[in-house]
Length: 366
Image 1 (tube, rainbow, N blue to C red):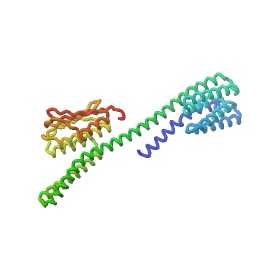
Image 2: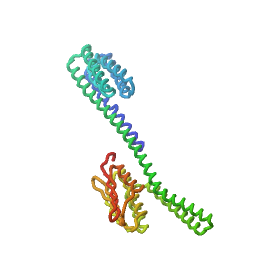
Image 3: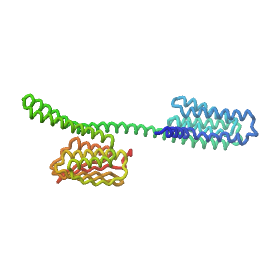
Image 4: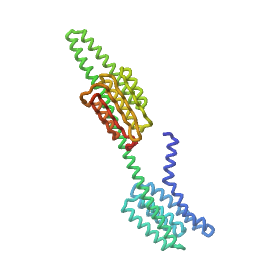
């Protein structure tokens, strides 16, 4: 994110937090209308109390502890005092009601709202107000409206906090799932090859001790070849981790099958995919092709990848005899990855082996 974007977000956040204070200007409206008829003391006190109220309000809206109650009491005292100098005080009472709705829990809101109403009534009773009915009507309507708005603002804040917590939790779960995926990939890549290297190295050592040097050298050469192949597989895996673009992944896998002598028929029809679906689909297709390279006896296969508005569908068919399926880390990994997106992976073994994967495009979090 650029520094310009950061500044824009900070300005936007500040506006929505304090921008509504512009409406406190209605408190000053009676002063501007009757400016010529007011004394200097009246104008000075009205402005001083207005400034004091704004300062208390800003402090209250940012308060996170029990000092909010003290600030609300101070704001009510300012409103009560301002009643003697300006008939625009109902506006300020409304903003006190907003703080009450925003800052307090349910029971505290009810008690505090009653205190605000009593202060309004007391101000109307004691203050020298020409049309008390208008004063009370405007005060109570503004208090009710801004009190409700304060409650709504608090709920929205709590919702955003929960949303952020859920997002953080999802990121943590995604990180755990990614570590498990990498562990499966490393197990698939390293496990068999390292076991073979260890066995052949032990065999070469025994042959060497038995002075069967020709056979020992053959085993050592095979160990070297296995090590080179393992290094190539590790490099390929690292490359795949860096690049999970589905189109490029399919192109690389198709080339890899061709290099290994496969007759591979690819049927790919794709539009833009959600990033998470694309990443998971890339891993699934890579694992499916790896299984073809390891287990296909006929080297003939069909890979079909299509999508509609609801889901991405992956079909892989190996034209080789299939009598039974014993899912290993590869097939289990495909199933687990599909389930990460609330998708489904099924395997069938009839005339040939068939893999079918369905990944929803409209799951939560996309």
